[in-house]
Image: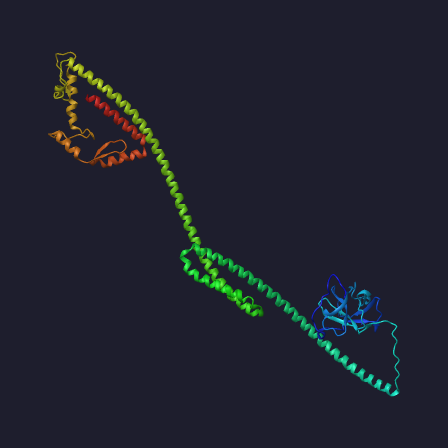
Length: 474
């Protein structure tokens, strides 16, 4: 057989489904001499259109399918199909590929679909030197032969009519077969698409199953509800995987199974939508917590800034306190010096310091009485006047500096009762207020928070005034 790079297209179509009248073979010899090339002449009918993969093969008589060819040659496509020369075609077979036995063979035209479109009369491959046998017949035999030929001609005509009817029926059946083949191809393509869709759907289900497993680990509250569903889906997937091998029998079964799986997919999609909504709520809650945390951080920063300001002010107040403390120590030193000087002067003048503290000064309408005989006044009037504040100091509280009424007989008893009454002390400047002066105490503390510099100045003035009063009393 001929060895070519590409095998011709064949089919398992039986002889009953072939169209032998669309290509007619011309000038076919009864026998061909072995060892030489042979040329095959054929004519294309007007309703037949050749294609690129059409071929002509040599078949042994009695073949059943186009796969039983001995050798073949590709046909040449004509340039112009409408011309008369395009209808007459030929193809040459090389002697090397021809059969070497004396069996009967015939030419067959096969299209690219593997369907036979024409067949020649049988022929042999034998030498030319074979002698023809001379047959001698009588007149009666000749008449019988003629009568037999007439019957054969009549039978041939009937066969031709039957052949035409069969060819027409064959063409109708071929058209029906072509439609059926097209429908079969369509069904095959639909089947492939359905299989691809089922495969993609199965992959999608597997991905969704993994996602559900991950979400099942994160959401412990829904673990019991989704666990049963996941087991059902796994069981359904395993059953569907086993049934996938059996569903090739019909398209209807696949359609029903696909609808069932789509319903399951819808339920899973609804569940996934609910979980996404729950996740959005959780994200909103996290966002609100982040906003609260940001607000708390801002408030904390503001408190830290206020703390820094208060620390700075405290350091400033400490510095002022240290300055005032140094001034106080200096004033105390000066006070001690003045006390010593005063004691020295009193001793120089022959007066006792303890006796002076109990002398009551006489006053004339708020003024001191002077001896009219003295030009510059009484030199001891200053000493007597200096002891007057000590008596008046009993009428004031040494803590809160509040005055006692003049009609109180025992000022010491009133002082003890006053000290036992509850009082309000400022936590910043240690200033003391009575319980009746609660509003003044609150305004005083409020001034510390709103205007500390002004309050520090006020406290400094109070300190200086007290120091001055103390020296004045001395």
